[in-house]
Image 1: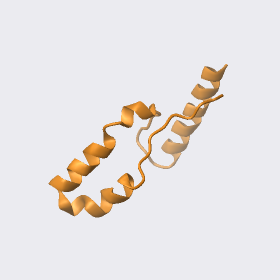
Image 2: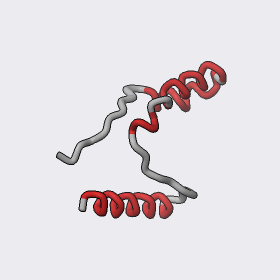
Image 3: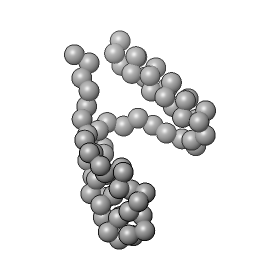
Image 4: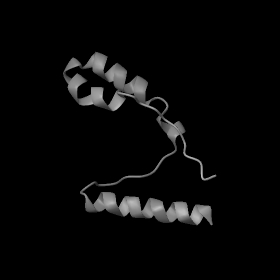
Length: 69
């Protein structure tokens, strides 16, 4: 039953994203983002002009999975 609720929520989020103009989106687990902070930091070093854009994304970056009980 939890998986059905998760799929329904995923579909609602997907549809909302499409309604907001996104071409495509998906929901991934937090473990799939573990390299993101390093990627953003490397990107900012490589392209200093991107610092203002990416800096806010790395501020207080915390990745965790919420539990259903």
